[in-house]
Amino acid sequence: MPRSLVTGGAGFLGSHLCEFLLKKGHQVIAMDNLLTGTIANIEHLQCEDFKFIKQDVTEYIYLAGPIDYVFHFASPASPLDYLQLPIQTLKVGALGTHKALGLAMAKNAGFLLASTSEVYGDPLIHPQTEEYWGNVNPVGPRGVYDEAKRFGEAITMAYHRYKNVNTKIVRIFNTYGPRMRPNDGRAIPAFVPQALRNEPITIFGDGSQTRSFCYVDDLIEGIYRLMMSDYHEPVNIGNPHEMTIKEMAETIIRLTDSKSELVTRPLPVDDPKVRQPDITLARTLLGWEPKVALEQGLTQTIAWFKKVLAQSR
Image (cartoon, rainbow, N blue to C red; front, side):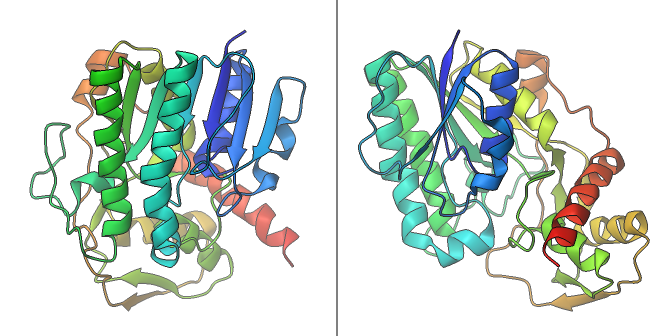
């Protein structure tokens, strides 16, 4: 039975990954300091093959026994989080990645870094391929996240090249689904609660900026395939279907039968104008592409938010 560590295992993506690995027959250790994750995300996973450890991964990681795979997902991941937690974001991207790589090397384990499409910054090439080096402002407010992930990629490749660690790097594009935190600063968890309450839906800028949204189940499948591959360079995983933020808001209003109206606010500093993955590599290398249609994924996500909002009343 493979034994896997998921750092950030109580977060949105980490908890879905833990659940997926358990279904694949892995023993799973979730490690999280609960800075942005929550025990509620993993309560349903309690079984003899699952263990939770509350720990900051920037500290020395000790685990007894063998570890076959290390999935490094620990990090604040929404604009609201990393703008409020800039030092912690930089530390987990640098020190946390270093500690997780050290564990993988000591255990002779496979290592996967959860990187991000934010390494491309406000891209000058569209759609974004893995060969693109990005257009990032290192001293802007978003730089704490962008550069933390870019450093994470650099140290991951260094451990692969000079320490022979079996490393993988996934560049994750916008992902959505159950267990996102309401109002975490990202579009869908902001729009859905507003629509369900018939409140004005807040759009930054004029809403013409584009994003590409991937349902979480599709993303996790792609990440697992990448870990099991023999490829070591970065791979984009995301849905190439591009739409404007305004179109997403209007779709959510329609699916929730909401009376909400759109209101605009100034665009944040360095907010990317476009975001769309080129997934040619994932298709050819992993045989992967997203399968969940947008309305299907949104319907499941809306149902989850309805339940959360009902419980909070």
